[in-house]
Image 1 (cartoon, rainbow, N blue to C red):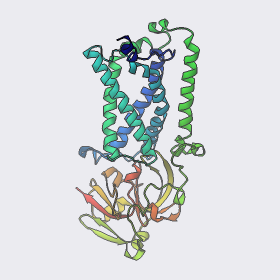
Image 2 (spheres, rainbow, N blue to C red; image 1 turned 90 degrees about the horizontal axis):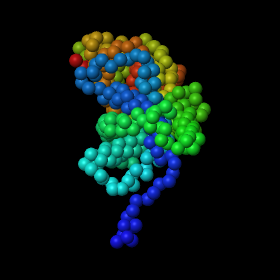
Image 3 (cartoon, one colour; image 1 turned 180 degrees about the vertical axis):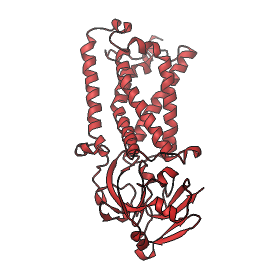
Image 4 (cartoon, rainbow, N blue to C red; image 1 turned 90 degrees about the vertical axis):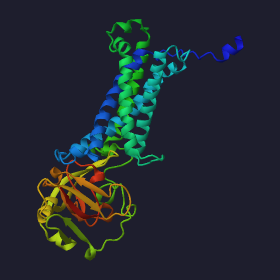
Length: 381
């Protein structure tokens, strides 16, 4: 019997930093990263998939709005990687608590922690793989990532409520609960926290340049460099991947529907008043870069077709496969003078991978909705 008991006796951890004070210190940073990531993630999700009641009222300004929020979303998500690893390191001995369940309340608490850990690891891991556009799973990333984000937020709030007394006791150096901790742990704890802060700084500085272009030369760990791509701009989806073959100038037609529908050839589009704007392409994977675009204002084309001022617009691509073949704009984007059907990028005719002959470019809009190879504009009621 004694032999059997010794075999199943839980291990004893003697590490001095697996304590509540260290866990609380790292948890503050991790909680902040998760909060920023969650809020900016909601902005991204509802900008791409707005509810019906909000679809016609999304703002087109500031022009850099989506670039900022999505860059911050990815940066905070990447910063959460070393923070989550450090947090799990401080608390993992509690996985071996014995007995594993002491009461119904304790069992529910452990279940909530398991849910929190699973959701945290899932969100960080899948989000990181999304920045590299690698999807080794069978589910659709966007809806699942969004749903688990709400699950993570709920489990985190529950965890904070359950652990509030202990968090309060170890929140600061002056908290009464910290007096019971050995004084000799102080230097080691400071060294650990310094190392974690250095890791967060390192992964941030070496990745954030894909969106914050002043640091673009330091993008050692970023999956994208903002300057690498045709015409000095990255491409997520090539013409070949979208099933777009060679488009001959003489055969291209743009159809604009409305009370007075019209069809324009490429030469007729080129003959219309051309406008130049500087707008960023900001993609959900976290990279972004500003560029100079030249083309025809969407508002001018809508006026030509007699579209109502508050009409939404559906933009239809010539691509034959893949998501986001069709996108919609509210009237604020459609009527914004910066919103163009662009024919030129940085002074040159668009390349096929950038949407030749015509692509949409609009302010404060996700890159996946900046439709390429545009063949039709439809004014909606």
